[in-house]
Image (cartoon, rainbow, N blue to C red):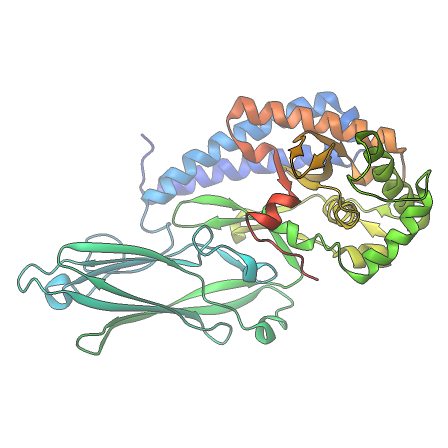
Length: 423
C-alpha cells in the first residue's frame, strides 16, 4: 500500500513529473514529423512511456486522494481530519467541502455537466444524538465577482448525511474579460436554516483560465486524478457558422460530380465527399500546419491548448492538430456526415463514420491526419492517421486505459452529452 503522508505524495508527484517530461519529449519527436506514422520506433517508445506514466499517475492519485493536505479540502466542520473548525457538540453538524477543479475553464464552463465535473462537492451530516431533531441546512457557493450563487437546501434526519455537487453559473459579461490566467476567490457558506445562523463562511483562492484557452485535462484535487476535458472540444465544431457554410460552396467544386449529399447516396459516395473537403482546404483555403503539441503544466493544475475556432483557422490559413481537427469535423458535419474527434496523448486527428442511416449505423470509422493537409495527398493523410489510430488503440487495450485513444463521435456529443456548437 502506498503511504499517504505528505512527503510520499510529493515524492510520487516528482516521479510522475519526470515521466511526464519524458513522454512529452517523445510526443514532440513523433508529432513534429510531417508523417508521424513513419516514426515507428519512436511510436513504440512513446507507447511504452505513456503506459509507464499512467502507472505512476495512478499511484500518485491514490496517495493524493488519501492525504487531507493535498485533496482540495476547503473546510471540515466537526471532523477529525483536515482543517477542523467548530465541533459537533456545538453545531450538531458535520460538513466537508472539496474543490474539484484546480483551474476553472471559462471557455467551456457553461456546457459542463455539474454531476460529472462540479466545481465543488459538499458533504453534510446531521450527527446530533441528544435531541434527535431534523436539521435544515443550506449550502451556498459562488466565485466572487464572477458567478451567481449555487444553492442547495437539505433536510437531514438524525444520523443521516447527504453529498451533492455545485457548479455556480458564471456571468458571461464578467468572464468575457478574462483574457489571461486570473486569480479569483471561491466562497462557500453553510447555514443553519432552523436557527437562522451562518455556521461557516469560508473562502479559497482558485484560478480562472483565459477564455481563449481550452483545457485538455484538469486536475481534480479531491480524487487526485486528471479529468479529461476533450469531449468539450465538440463545442468548437461549428457547422452552422457563416464562414463554414460559405466555404462548403468551395468544397463542392472539388467533388467529381459537384455535389455534397451526406449519407443520402451509396456507401461508395462517402469518401469522395471527404476528399473534396481535404482538397478544398489544401488548394482553396491554403491551410498550413503550425506545430503546437499540447503543453502539460502539472504544477499549474491543467493541460491547456489554444484552439482556434474554424472561422479563425480559415481566416489565418493555419492550424495546429486540434485546430485542423475541429475545422475538418465542422465541414463534415456541415454536409451531414458523421465525424469524430480522435484524441491520443499530445495529439488529435479527425475521423468519419463510413456509413450511417437512421436504421443502420456502421460504427466503423476512417481516419485522417489534418496536419498533412498542406504537405501530403489525401491517401497519405488517411494512411498516416490509420496507423496512429491502430497503434494507440493497441496501447489503450494493453493498458486498460481509454485515455490513450478517445473517439468522440459528434453525433453522440450532440445528442447524449448535449455539447452544442459555440456559434
